[in-house]
Length: 319
Ligand code: PLP
Image (cartoon, rainbow, N blue to C red; front, top):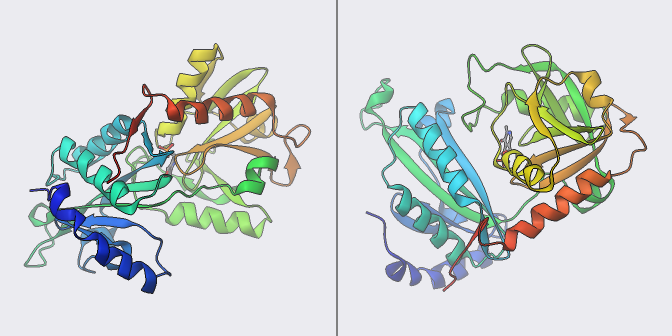
C-alpha cells in the first residue's frame, strides 16, 4: 500500500522546482493519498470531516540532529487516539513509521516538526453517518518550530491565565490529541489582551490545566507538580517525569490552583514544539525573582542531551 522509498526519490527534482515558487509554504514534504508531495500541494477536500467537524486526531513528533525523539511514545498515543475515535488507519504502525521517516528524509530537514493525522475523511455519498466515511491518513515534515522563541527561552515566557474558557474533559476529551482549539485560541487572545505572550487555561473546576500546545509544571521546594486533569498526556510531560526519576526529583500529577502556580519557585511549560520552556511571569507578576530557575535549567539541559541517546531517539536515514 505504501509507496516505497525507491519510486519516491524521483519526486525530488519536482520538489526542488516547487520550493522556488512556493516560498509562502514551509519547506517540507507531505504524504497523502499514497503520494509524497511538496507541502504546497498537500490539500484535502473541504468535504473531509476533519475540516468540516474537526473530526480528526493527530500527533507531532520532532526530529533533532537527524534523530526522532521518542517516536514510539508518539505512535502509541496516536494509535490510542485513533482507536478511541473509532477510526481505522489505512496503514500499519510500521508503515506509518516508514512514511514519517520518508517525509523527513525527503525534506532533508535535520531539525523537523513531523505531524501524523487521521481524519474521519469523507464518503462518496456525503453521508451524515461517520461510519461510512473513509478515514484519511496524512503526514508531513516541516522545519522545527518552538512555542517560545530564543529570547523567550532565555528570559522566560510571560503568560496569563484565561478567565473566559474552561477545558471540559466530559465533552471533547483533551487526552485525545485534537483540533478542537477554539478554547485554546480564545485563551490565547485573552492572554494577548492582558499583554502576555501565551495562555494557561483552567479546567471545569477552575484548576490550572494546560495551554495552547503545551503542558505546565510548577516547582516548589525542589518538588515538581503538573495538572492531572483536563490535559493531554504530553510526551514532553512524560519525559520530564522520566528525567526526574533519573536524577531523583519528585514529580507528581495533581490539582494545581491559580495561587499554587503563581506562588511556585519556578514554572515551565513542555511541548514537542520547543521542549522544556521557562515561564517567569504570570498575570503581570514575576515568579520569585523573575529569572529562569536552576531546576528548569537542569531539566532543559538534560532534555536536549537525551536527543543523541539511542535509548531515547532513532536516527533518520537520509538519501
Ligand atoms: N497540550 C496540548 C493541547 C497540545 O496540543 C500539546 C502538544 O501539541 C501538548 C499539551 C504537549 O504535548 P507533547 O509534549 O506531546 O508535545
